[in-house]
Every structure is written in C-alpha cells, then in structure tokens.
Length: 310
Image (cartoon, rainbow, N blue to C red; front, top):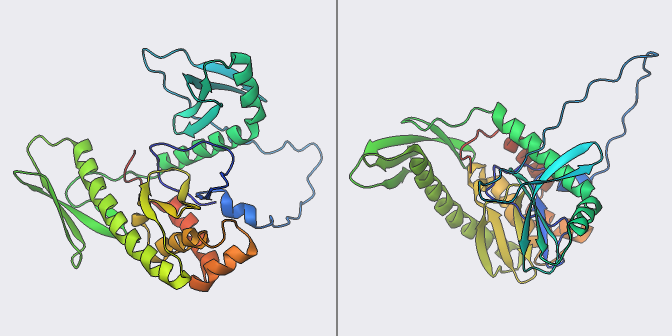
C-alpha cells in the first residue's frame, strides 16, 4: 500500500467512479499482486494464539451545537458516526482522521441509514482501521519543531529553515545552499508560520508538477486539460476521462523519481482508463522501474517525519 501524508479531507465513495481512476495511497498496488504463500509452522497443543493489537478507530468530534453522534454495532465494533442531512439524493460516506461522517437525504429514515452503513461495513471498517494505523504511525514519528534551523523535506532531501525578523512575511529559497528563509513579523504565531511555509511548498509543487506533466505527456503523446493540487490523505493522484489531473501536493517532499512515477501513472490513464496489462505497459514505456518506485514510495511515506498536521 502507498501512504500519503496527513489529510484535510478525504473523499469517501467506496466505489471508483468510471470517469475517474484514483491512485490509492495504501491498498491499491497490494491488490494487484497475489499474496505470497506462507508455510504454517505446526503449533504446540493448547498454545494460546498471539494477542492481536487493539485497533482504535477515529471518532468524530461533536461540535457544541451539533446533533448527538449516532451509534451502530458492526460486528464486534460499536461505532460512533456523525449524521448530516442534506438535499442530496443518495447516502454518502466520508472517512477522515475524525472518523465516519454520513450524509443522507432528509426523506431517508434512520433505519435506512443504518442499513446502508451495514451494507458498506467491510469498506468502512477497513478504511477506519487504516486511518487508525496511520494516526498511530504519525504519533510515533517526531514532528518538525518550528524553530530556526529546522530541517524540512524537499524533493527527497532536507532543506534548512531560517527565520529572520522582518517588517513583512516573505519566503526566499536559495536552491544552491538549500536554505528557505522566512521573514517573521512581530507576533507571528507558530500556526501562521506553518501556513506560510505550506503555501510555499504548494507553489513549488504546482510549478514542478506542471513541468513533469508536460515532459511525460510529450513522451506518451498525450496532453492533460488541467492540474489541481490535492490534500487527500489516501491517494497520490487521480485522472478523469476529460484529462483533469489532481496530484497530492505533499509529493513535493519526495525525490523527483517518485514524483515522476505518479505523474506517469496518471498520464497513462489518458490512454487506458483502467489498470489492465495495456495500462501498465504504457507506464513502463516511459517509466521502466515503476514497480520499484511504488515500493520506494510506500517506504518513504512510512519514514517521512510529520511536517504539517493538517
């Protein structure tokens, strides 16, 4: 599975829209390859099975003026979720770091909502478990300390953050020295500093992604219609049949070959809107070591320090 960084919001439809193929951050590539057969060693009689780690699902945070959270029993899990009513015509599911949110038409009964959740419980529990595991992994990794001299990941290596007093906020990057200088005005809060640096990273991401899309588009003989940055937590990119490509801006933290792999993957969907052998042949024609890249992206994602919490 491929890991993306911490999200702001996650799209929640459990089905892949026929007009949009998504590059999932964790479970997509694992599903392509058959699981390796494992030999089971004989166990002593009456030996107790190993204890399984307890999975802690994320739970929605209820706003003071919001309706109470609802509960539903899914197997052995007593799950809390937030229910919202809207004018939409179908029931929608959204899972992020704050748990499960369900949006349902006003005419739908609570019993119908519960039945819809039970029908999707396998997908819901899987995604909640992944969220819980990623949150635990983030807690194990030391977050970036926002002080002068902090090290920030940029294109597979660190750059140094320099903070200087200034009459106005600014970001200046010395590529040769690999130093990002930020002008800090009096009274600037830490969250404002983070936001200023994040804006710089996002601008760098959009510039670089546009260049790589043009480069690999020429190699594949295709042209994308538009580029949009994404903050999704569980996928690195997506492509629609109309040629609209979304790429996760946090890819700017990773080495250029990994960025290129995601770019080549999404552009190949402009030729093959599937994940067939023909699709992978298209990817391989411009990125021969795509198999190594997806493995490296998964590994780097697990090792990446927590830079931005939202």
